[in-house]
Image (cartoon, rainbow, N blue to C red; front, side, top):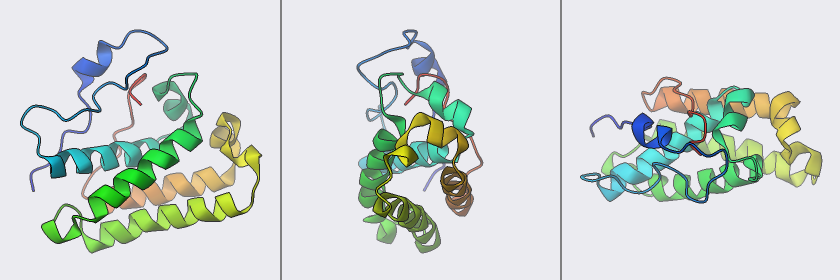
Length: 154
């Protein structure tokens, strides 16, 4: 499978408002297959999860609860992409590394601590540092370097 261009910086740059109703560069691009779109959405989520927390916060509309939104998207996109392991969309190793992220998230969820899901927690909690580490490992397993989300891109 060809390498996926994760961010369309020009489209994202046209999103000048600090608040927005449609996430830029999240629809299928012309010529992009459904499988490529699914992989790109998973890669966007992994890049966001792996990013330094200040960069992650800048990537989101300030009205959005970042942790909840990102984890929900990641879970959905992983399920869509992982179903395509047989197509070569992602390797078994990369899929397992992504599942390790979900395992960490599940562990955090089972604690029933709302304080883990705030923007402040993203910036300061060691649990989120571990999520970032796991996301970077998953990106590496998929053959991608860290390419954090641009401002107003998520």
